Length: 203
Image: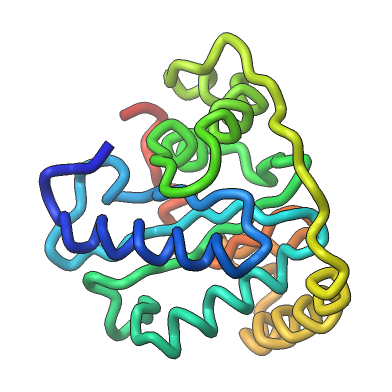
């Protein structure tokens, strides 16, 4: 579904989702946030939720950020309007580490840019308890699509990519990590802020 508002931003997200999926070990790219909900303002960016092939989570994130930065398409704190914000990466078994009203809202409003629709349906079904807890409908069934590990060269880069990511984040000097930052083996989320804690129970 393409919203009537912000067609340029939507098309930019679609273009980059297709390009990144073509060259990186990505299973799918989903649109999340205000643009997916149809609530984006003129100052909005496009939040990307990226599904990675097993063994490539941190490498995909590093590749996506570097590519978008070189192209001038990466959202920054100082300049994010009309740009892309790849802030959430997930790999098999597709389990979200945070179960909150905010995550339920994101999952409900996801829009598929690349990859099979069945993957989104499976992830929503996998978290059907979370969706129902916060008043959102959940699929009545979902079959897990087949996945394949990332090629060996991507897996070989993963330890270095993980080390570089952890080194950059730990320079924040805060323990525990700020809300919105999660560094796991199958989930990587880098979207600091308090909206995770402040989102209403239902919308």
